[in-house]
Length: 193
Ligand code: SF4
Ligand code: SF4
Image 1 (tube, rainbow, N blue to C red):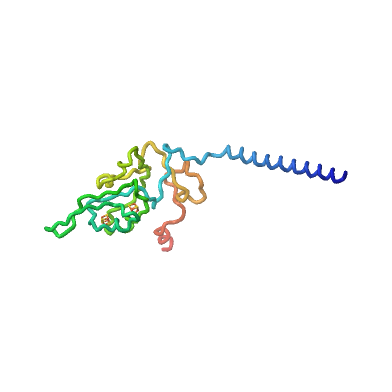
Image 2 (tube, rainbow, N blue to C red):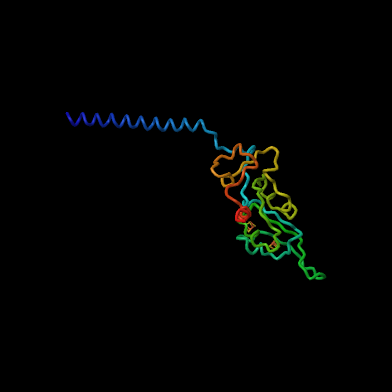
């Protein structure tokens, strides 16, 4: 009889405990409903890509010396460098340059090793097309100025977490001139003076 009563007591205790935990869980859930959603409402809100974001590659035709380093360091030897040897000037003459972004893995090796800085990474990540052949960018397409999220009048640009001021977790409603976290090297030098 005693054993039975103990079992009933334990059961009741567990039931009360379970009820309390469910209540706690629900109160947390309802509390979250009062908070501002962290959703970034693409395409009307877009995160500003970081400074080292590896987007579409930008190419400057005039700077290229047709050394083909970009082809050699590319994991898939992707850039197509078409050049002629100009006997008169004894220099390579670039005829055509292209990168197929349908194949590129955006590793940035070509940008890293280009000796004349004629390649650079942009923050352009909206490259989708209906036809994959349109992703094969020629030297003119590669030279187009990249899309800038901060200059788009239809878009509210939002900062990524690492660019928010110290202690701030939500980029919504942040003033444009809000400081970045930490001090810049030049500020530290200034402080030392
Ligand atoms: S980003 Fe990488 S994969 Fe793309 S062309 Fe450059 S080296 Fe090749
Ligand atoms: S590494 Fe730079 S300079 Fe050399 S071929 Fe490639 S893009 Fe041109």
